[in-house]
Amino acid sequence: MARQSGLIKIKGTLDNVSFYKTTDGHLARMKTSVDAKRIASDPAFERTRENNAEFGNIANAGKLLRDAVRPLAMNASDGRVTARMTALMAKIKNLDGTSDRGSRNVGVGITDPMSPTYLKGFEFNKIAKMSSILFKPLSVDVVSGEITISNLKPINDIVVPQGATHVSFSGGFAGIDFATNQRQLFDTNIVNLAIDGTVTTVDLSPLGVPSLSNSVILLKLEFFQEINGTQYSLKNGAYKALQILTFQ
Image (cartoon, rainbow, N blue to C red; front, side, top):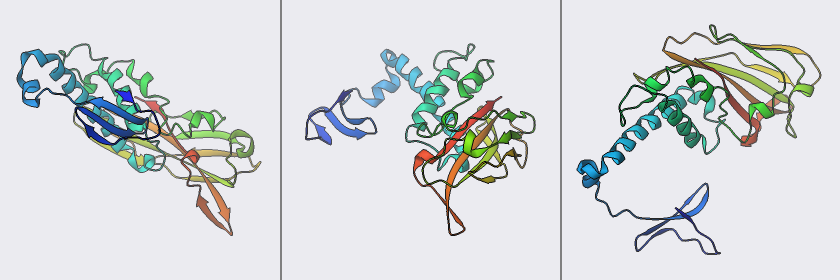
C-alpha cells in the first residue's frame, strides 16, 4: 500500500486505486482484478486459500480472548489492540508443529511451552502501559488468581497523572478454550486508594476460578479525581492500564 501526501487527501476509488483513511494516515492501494470464485477454486491460489484459512483462525482466537476480558478492557484499550493481539496469535499459531499448512491453528499452538511468553505482559493500552505506571513488585497466585501488591505507597510507587487524587486496582481471572471457543471471566474486588503516603497492601481475589483449558490473570489500574466527595474517572485513555500478568 502507498501513503498519500500533499494537502488534499482523497477518499474513494479512482480507476483501479482505492483511497482510504486509517489510524496510520491516508493510504492508497490497487484494487485486485482476481475474481473471488477463482481464488476459491483455482489450484494456482492454493497457497492463498491456506493463508486465508489460517488468518481466519488467528483472527477468531484474538477475538475470543478480547471478548473474554471485554468488561475489563472496554475502557482500557487502544485503537490498535486488535491488530496487536492478532499478530501475537499468528506467532502462537506458528508453534503448531503437527497440522498441515492451511490447518495450523492457535488451539494446537497454544499447547507449546513457548506460547505463554507471547501473551505474558501484553498491554491492552499502549498509551498507558502498566509497566510504565506501576513501579512496585507484585505476586500472583496462578491457582487462585489472587494478586498481591505488598506495602504500596501510591505517592512513591505510581506515576500519577496531573489532577488525579485516587487510584483503583482491579483484576480478572479469565478462562479460554481456543479449540471450543468457550470463555469465562471472574472479576476481582476493587481496591480504591488515595494517592498519598499511606502504605497499603493491595489484595485482589477473583470471585471464582475458570475451568477451561487456558487461563489469564489480568491487572487493571485506573485514576480518579475527587471533587466535593465524589470521584470522577479521568476520561483520557492515558489513565487506564490493563496488563496480562500470567498465561497458562
